[in-house]
Length: 127
Image (cartoon, rainbow, N blue to C red; front, side):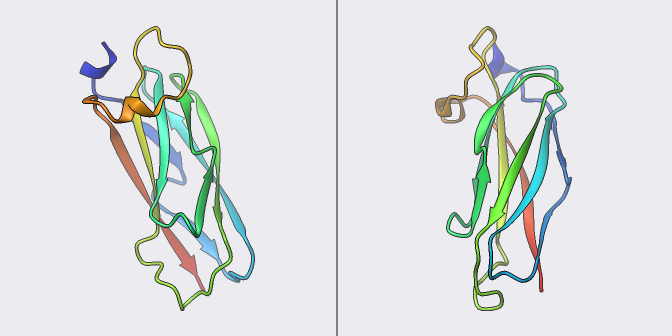
């Protein structure tokens, strides 16, 4: 059963953080790659600490072993220096999908007692 085995590793490119550069009077988009480096199919979901400013497309999905997806992280226009950006980040959450299940994202897989792993990617804003 998929839930008894902890989810394997993922890789992100970039690995540690996402950087947006000024000016912030228009929407910016930054692409990140998420790679399932485990031997099992995973479901992933993306969360953000600031839904007003940050968006991710696609926000969730399913990846087969060694499969990758390109995500568009967007930052809407905002008043740099006048809004708190210290805690801005996106979080990739992932969990194993049950053996034999359809390749379809299901939110409830993250809400049961199965193991969910997380990777935080802080957002850095250059003036």
